[in-house]
Length: 334
Image (cartoon, rainbow, N blue to C red; front, side):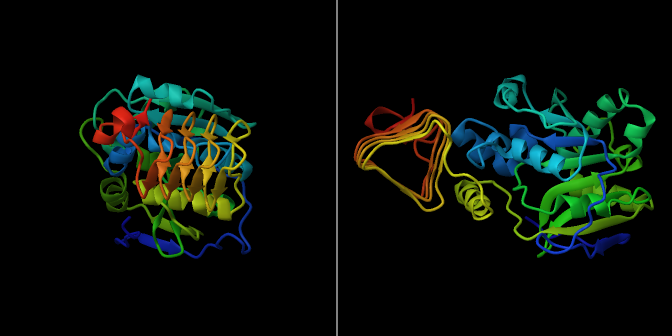
């Protein structure tokens, strides 16, 4: 990720980091647009293809995927209103079918049928389509934008409290100035997105806001920015969540007697680790099985895959979709 830039009209706000004193003001924005589709960023396409699901739908703890965790943490920090999940095809809707809205939050899934618009274009389209259904008070608060390939480990209350309605945008950042995956945009700023063509969020929309004479601030509200784009960053995100106290094993995951699961490993719904198998610092996704005496280390086992008996999987996405190792006795998605 590129550090937060400092163009003319851009300011960095001194906001407390998690664990320090922070603002507890309620969120003035009543709309959140979550970029949750496979095409939300080209940086995640490889991982999405390998695992057969959008990065935003990846389990990040034993209870929720990335989108679910973002929505839950926003609600806990005082966000109430509407959450729009922006997906890129109707087939992706199923990945979020089990997502439950917290109290005070409604969920709506919106398919972006306009082709490749870029993050800024997708946000503008979702706002334009949705804003007509809102009362003036709802529209006045602008929108929170979530890039759901990022890890939601930040001080949401501090970010919400730093929103200034007279400004154009607020960008969440970690202590080392890496983007934290959360941005607030004023209604006027959202109106700057053109109706056609590719339009990026940070490089184009932020620049347009500054040119329009509106202030753009950065809120330092997170310690560990982590954008998930490949195997290593996904495993790092899982480890960071577990260091923050996240559960490591879904209730219906099975670890047979004699199997060993250790390190920052995550066992998802329906995962099975058979007798004699070893799983270390890895993620076994829903319905996947690690068969007897197999070893999986620093790796991801895709949904529904079976790692054969005695097989060794190290530093890889096992049987990635489209790979040669998917067929025959080499295992892969079943």
